[in-house]
Figure 1 (cartoon, rainbow, N blue to C red):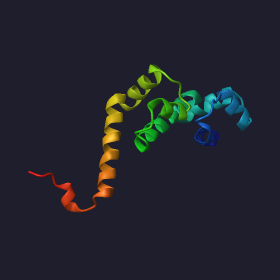
Figure 2 (tube, rainbow, N blue to C red; figure 1 turned 60 degrees about the vertical axis):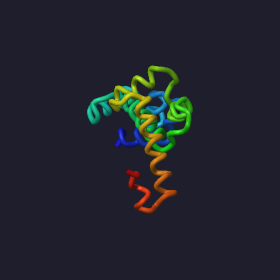
Figure 3 (cartoon, one colour; figure 1 turned 135 degrees about the vertical axis):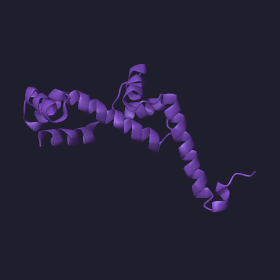
Figure 4 (cartoon, rainbow, N blue to C red; figure 1 turned 90 degrees about the vertical axis):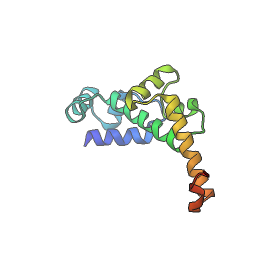
Length: 127
């Protein structure tokens, strides 16, 4: 239950600066207690869980809005600027950021084309 409440807190506040002591205080428990429950149920610390949540939000933000600046996307997810965030993203998801951005942008272009050209004959490339 505490872990679930913490994850819910992360979901509501991920874009803000968050400290684990702030979360523990919000839940009315100690940091040690929160650390214990995360270790027991998820095998990670609350700080690691927050980082994973933010990286997942970044993944979805880029997927949903691939044309926004990478800097804006990173900051909107509560992550810090710099190569460290990009390296964490690449290590977590196993894809290089430039390739991921390109793929998301092409997919968005394909979806836009499909909406503008719903006819099946637009799907066939001329020979």
